[in-house]
Image 1 (cartoon, helix red, strand yellow):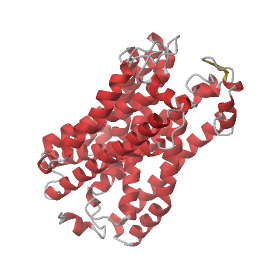
Image 2 (cartoon, helix red, strand yellow):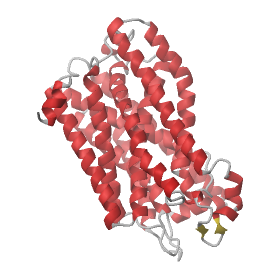
Image 3 (tube, one colour):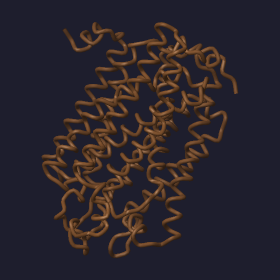
Length: 422
C-alpha cells in the first residue's frame, strides 16, 4: 500500500493526504540535509542554524496560541472561522518539542557548544572565563544547564497543555453544541494569556538573548511576542487563501474578514516597529557599553569597518520589516486583493526569519571577535532547517485538519462571524 493510500485510508481526504505527505517528505528531506551539514561544515554553525529554524517555527505556533487566547478573552466574533485553522496549527507543538531535543542533548553532552555560558571554562575575549565573570555569577541561579533544561521542558509542556484544552473544548462543541465549552475556553484564556506571555518571554531570553548573556534588554520578550503574532497572522492569511482557492471558504469569508485580518497585521507591524525602535533608541541614547556592544557587533568589525549585519539591519530590518509592510497594508484595496496579500504575507515571514537570524547568527564569531557574515555556508543550513522543521509543522496541521469541522459550526458567535461587517 502506498504512503498516500495509507494516509487517506486513515481518515484524510485524498487531496489533503497528498499535501500532508508532500509536507512530511519536505520536512524529512530538510532535516536530513541539515544533519549532513554536520559532516561538511562547522558543526557549531549548523547547530545555530537549527536554533534559528526551531525559534522561527515555534514563534509562529506560539503566535497562533496567543491569538486564540486573545480571541476568547475578548469574545471576538469576526475571527471565529480563522480560529479553527489556528487550532489545527497548535498540533505542531509536540513535534517542535521533539525537534528541540537535539539542542538539549548537545547542551549536556558538550556544554557551551551552543550557549557558551554553560561551560564555566569558556574563554571570554579579554574577560577571563565564564566561571570568573561577575556578570555571569550574578545570573548563575538563572543561567545554568539544569534550569535551562527544566524551563525549556516546562515551556513546551505548558504550550501543549494549553493547546490541548483549547482544542478539546472547541472540537467538542462541534459535537454537542454546549455553550459550556465556550466558557471553558474563556477560563483557559484568563490564565493562559499571562502564562503564555511569561513562557514566551523566558523562552526568548533563554534560547536567543542568552547567546550574548552580557546584554540587557527589558523589551526582548515583547519583541519576540510581536514577531510571534505577525508570523501567525501571515500564516493565517496564507491558509485562508489556500482554503479559498480550494473552494472551502467560498460563501464563508467576505471582504470584511479579509480587511479585518489585514488591519490586525497592520497594527502588529506598527507595534513591532514601536518595540524595536524603542529598544534601539533607549540603548543608543544611554550609550552604556554593557548594552551598546550588542548593536556594535551587528554593525562594525573590530577594526571599525562596517560588516554585513549593518546592512541587514538597515535594509532588511528597518525597510523590509517595517516600511514595506506598513506602506503596503495602509491600502484598503491591498487588503482585499488575494494576490497582493499572498505576496505581503510571504514577505513578512521572510523578514521575520531575517530578524531571528539577526538576533542569533552574529553570536558566531571569528578569531578576532567579529560576527561571521550572513552570506556564508551557514545560511544554507539555516534554510534547510527552516524547510525541515516547517515541513513537519505543516504536516502536523494537515493531519489535524480533517479531524473536525472546517469551521466551529456551533460556536455562539458563528452567526455574527458569517455576517461580519466593518
